[in-house]
Image 1 (spheres, helix red, strand yellow):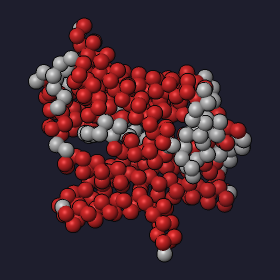
Image 2 (cartoon, rainbow, N blue to C red):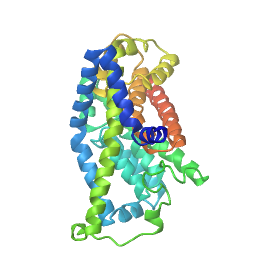
Image 3 (cartoon, rainbow, N blue to C red):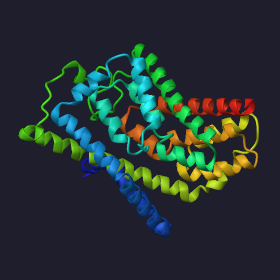
Image 4 (cartoon, rainbow, N blue to C red):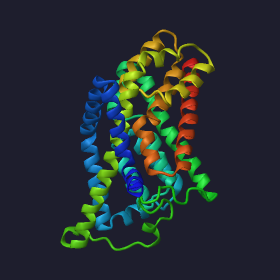
Length: 340
């Protein structure tokens, strides 16, 4: 019995954690249990189009063998790949959740972690709809600066990873059982011919179904837990309380905003008017930038996605790059506003 329970916890610990949280809420805070369940369900439905498309692409690439071509395309000039990854992340419509299966697929295909990290860091910060809303709520200058911060953070992070990889680090960035490694993965080492009409082959049809099912279950369990935790943070940590701690001028508010932005995630859209109001009441614009960048990159879904997919050292580097990049973005924007 003990062995069976241990195996159940090992295989289903994420689902069990979600169930335990909702169960505890049902006992001690019934309304919040219902709100958290509704929040998680709604969030999953809202991200479903991105997830379904990304899962289908990943399964199709695996079944046809097209992932060989994709991985091979990323074996060229690392600097170019990092730049393209950061640019794509900064302007793509993917949210931090919708990009998860794409990231998993790229790493499993053997795409170097440096290019993937550039995309991974830039993607949660800005997208077309966020740009429009930022320009409307704050101003166009802030929206452009935040876009440049997203791309700059991606380039910075990708470059750091590239230099570390040249020294032998991160040869296999993915956790055991997820894909087959990053840079130098089997997709590149042993390329196989591509079969575009995969549905004519029973084995490839089975591979498509297995990949789609495995990816769906993997994403569902982690996103469910992430959204439940996010609902609790939004419910128990008032946004006004978080942003009120970021007032003042000078360097300290930027440091504080960077550190507060990591654990105290606010929905990117909801945070804009609050940050805008504080800027009107005297908060340094650089502190607002640092908070929005740090909060976006290290949001609950984004951070949990990194933790679920990558090894702990990659997760630690992701957090470190997020902190340093957010602080640098806030500092540079503050200097720009003072010179303007």
